[in-house]
Length: 253
Ligand code: ZN
Image (cartoon, rainbow, N blue to C red; front, top):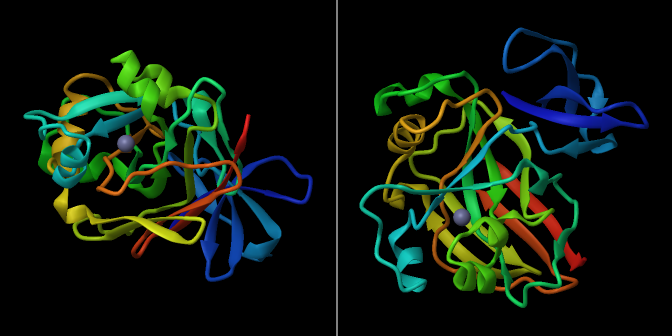
């Protein structure tokens, strides 16, 4: 099942689900109790929003060996985690804004796990039980500031630096899916989720040994090699096999 948040005409944002090329409303909340209403709104007539409003956005650095290598880093011995603020979220199709403080803003195509249940100290082999589904993310990064600051909060935290969506797929299998990124039609990144250094179960166990995970929290699972710059006027598309595509234009702040 694919779950979304959407706007239809000038009505307020609401949760929905997709059946073929139609959208149905959700009564209640898809993270807890809900009822699916009949899918009868044409998909191409709704505006798709970021599919949930995360309380926490936890990201994993250097989780693909070829990306760690292109950055001149070793693969970490335990997962390297950092966070992006919820204020950095934008919708599919919304513009990524290049801030004046950076001269090198880059894309990072990533598979994102969406948490569906509250949990702490979740064992790796139990992770499936608290994951609601998967979506597509772009961990936009001001690479020059990431290097100069040491801490990553500024480099990863600008407004518009967290596009994700367009839906949460509850049946997606994350074991071996191709992730690609194209910038203005040019291929940049390509990798498979099977090449993650730490798999999703291990990541959920590690993160939940630190902090309580809540419904709607996101775990960005790291990016394969091929990161590169985004320029004013570009558009960036992240595609994950079996999950869909996420496209955002790029502009100046
Ligand atoms: Zn990343």
